Amino acid sequence: MFSNSSKQSRIDTLIGEGTTVEGDISFAGCLRIDGGMIGNLRGDHSTCTLVIGKQGSLKGSISVAHFVIDGSAEGDVRVENNLEMQSNGKIKGDIYYKNLEVQLGAVIDGQIMQGNQLEFASSAD
Image 1 (cartoon, rainbow, N blue to C red):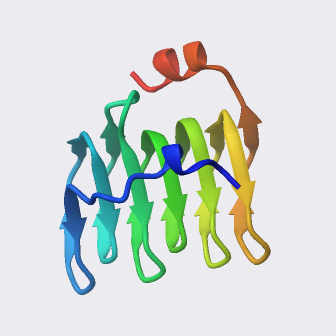
Image 2: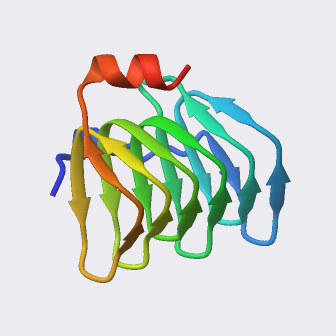
Image 3: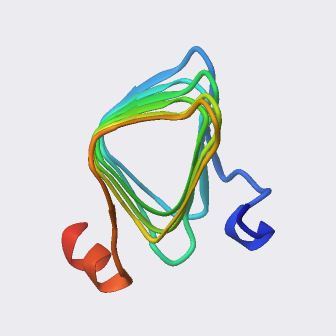
């Protein structure tokens, strides 16, 4: 399991259950999605954390430093540091990561590629 330093306890932005957001989002800090989102997400690679809760869903590409998923995502995922797939997590798309934790029950439908930090900077632009 990843150290607590890879997770933030503070949520800076919340997309709540029953809410759907359409459009691209760029963020810093921690973004939690318990509702739905259609669009691309890009975070500040040095500090950002994306959490998709059990009821949350996202359709679009993701580029973040840390990612915890217990809901679903459809699109390519680039994670500079830690990707944690919890037991209900589902990703349909290619995954580029540095560190990966997958709990029993999680589903990945796509290619999984481990990379280094330089690859993330050039591929996320």
